[in-house]
Length: 331
Image (cartoon, rainbow, N blue to C red):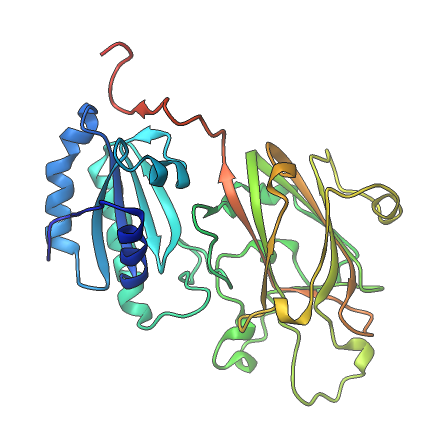
């Protein structure tokens, strides 16, 4: 148990993120009344929950550490950012002690129950943290919750599968220790050929930085015909701000926002490809069309298990115009 650690440099903060499984960072300013009000409570929370190399509480002065505030898009004071294994898992804006404590306690339980770490460190389960097959780029969060699941549409999908499973928060069943014990098909496969067209509408404008695709086709000896064993995606085209899904002919004819070629080396041990996007082209996005053009083999089917969207949700305000949550204008 320890008091919050005052961060004095970028190098110090990077070291803390590397050494502690969970880091709770309080971005504050000395002139902010809400920051002063919650400071004693934040110190008590640190004294009661912090554990060496497991949970570390830090304070980041946005006046002296402006580069860190800018890197992590701090636009309101106070802002609490929670990191797990060096990646952002959530942000809490404002001085509400109960909201922050509940979230910290849940994350602490997740870490203690999970034991060791590893690639793709997010927890599993249907609530709270969503499973991810790869780490988050520094400074960005998983914004998959902005997806309007009722508006999802997937063309050329086998009818045995549901499109909503792609955004399921749970760990794919194929990664379970005894995956053969479950008959649940928590993935999607293409139908007549290897192409898929996925329309993903958002509930709010977003800025997309990275697309994470997880594909876990069966491996090892299999008696099935090679044409029936699904492949991983190879060529993916992305289209932004479409009012509805595209048709396959239209998707072939018009210029995409970005085309991505996925190589064998891009897939990690969790079957996840971490695909950086041309960030300047993915600003203020209201929808995304993911067009899987082909797969990485000769099969007639392509398989997708999970899709995760990484970036920023909502509008980002400029630094220097930090909002004091809890104060009335002019105070």
